[in-house]
Image 1 (cartoon, helix red, strand yellow):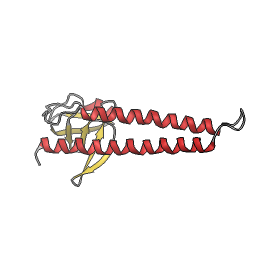
Image 2 (spheres, rainbow, N blue to C red):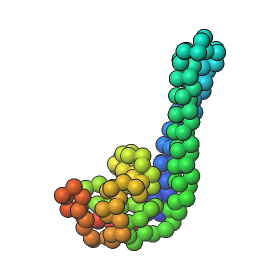
Image 3 (cartoon, rainbow, N blue to C red):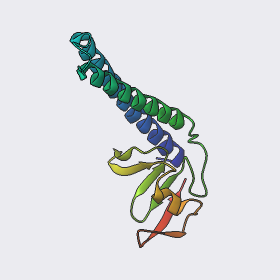
Image 4 (cartoon, helix red, strand yellow):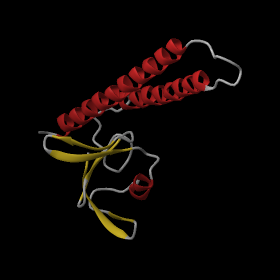
Length: 150
């Protein structure tokens, strides 16, 4: 598989995972709202159960907003760009692991190979930002070599 096709597939995989995350959060919001509606009005001024449910709904709403923002970020990645240095949208192959610089999704498997989707805010990215193929960087007292970038 060529590099552009691989990067397109990684973007699609991340979009799929993030869309699934958003759907799970939407379901949670609906369930909490239904519980609050079924419970009815507070029984007295000290009844905090409904208020607790509504706070939980609001917490999930913030998570959904964050998840949708992350989807927006994924859609901004142009898989046709051939990166020469570590930056947003790059696939970085090191002697340790394969990394996709996008959003923080963690480890996922594509085509029987493990990849780590990380954001530009994590310390690991900051340690390798701007490095090129063949260069090394230090992270947690370990020397890591960049084997390929695209």
